[in-house]
Each structure stands twice: as structure tokens, then as C-alpha cells.
Length: 134
Image (cartoon, rainbow, N blue to C red; front, side, top):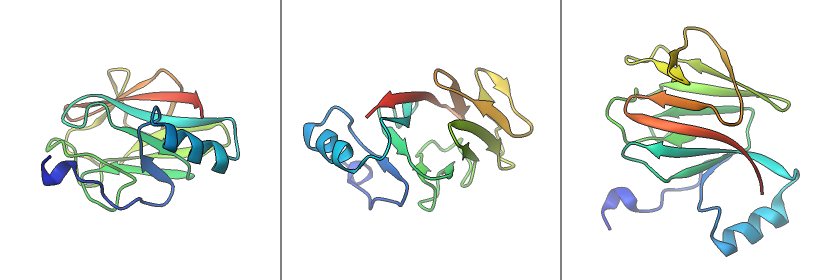
């Protein structure tokens, strides 16, 4: 196991989790306030198979540790994009990144709605947006 694979401190509002891990499922079940939650799964790139559970109104994505979703992809900017939750709706906004943010292979230039099934591309990383029963 490399140092990069070590567990990092949990940031408020978003967690890098294995949703199939039984102890994790029990904790989520006990603490959840809704039956479904937004899950962001990295489906390609250096962080492939990592899952993030979004629970805050703003979810920041980038390489820096201050981001809720911290990616190791060198083509992702330090503060690349953010996802804003409005009730059950989500918007994604590029934060002036070098390589842009794409939703379903379309470059976004202003806040853009996203939904379950959408794919967010940042650098060489692709994240699948899911609304899952927790």
C-alpha cells in the first residue's frame, strides 16, 4: 500500500466510502436522514473505483486537500469545479480550470444542471453521478 492509498481525514459533508462494506452500510443507515443520497463514483482515471457521498449544499472538486472530492489526476486543477445542491437538484460549475469541465462530453461554460446517470469529466477522470438508496 502506497502513502497515497492511506486513509485521509474525513472532510465534513463528503466521504470516500465503500458502500458495499457492511459496517459502513450500518453507519449510513443509522445516521441517514433521507432514503436516497447523491453518490459520485470515479469510473476512470487514477482514482477509479473511489466513491464519494455528497451531503453538503456545495461540493468542491480538485487536487487540493481542501476539496470535498480530492482527486490525484495531474490534469485536474487545484480547485477545478463545484457542485451545488438545490433541494433534489444539482448544478455543476467550472471554477476557471485549465482543462475545463465536461458533462456527458459537452464542455460547460456556466453553471449546468446534472442528474443521476450523468458523467462529469475533469482531466483524465470521469465521475458517474448516481442517486442511490443508502
